[in-house]
Image (cartoon, rainbow, N blue to C red; front, top):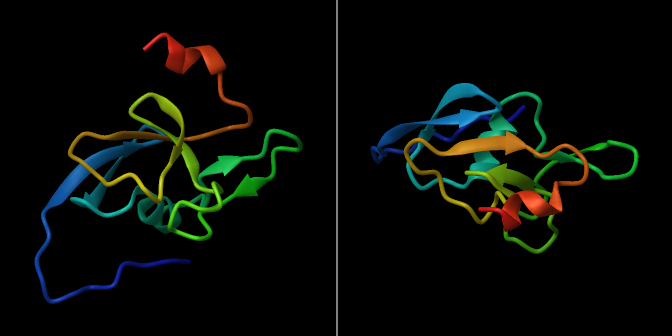
Length: 103
């Protein structure tokens, strides 16, 4: 569905975990862009009904790109930049409100 534009500049590739799978990504690129490139092309499901949602605005305004990043739920993946060893999980339904409080 989506693919990365190959620019003339070289960017350092790092490995991140997305839903338990090792994936190569460019250092500093938005996490939302990585999620759009790898099936299923979504970042979360809705609280009511479980409908899949994907990054939409890519600038932090719509909150459709919420995902769990490095253990923090409801993180806007379009605003988070890829770092080496980052752990990303697509968010399913309502996040546990106590999970982040216990960190």
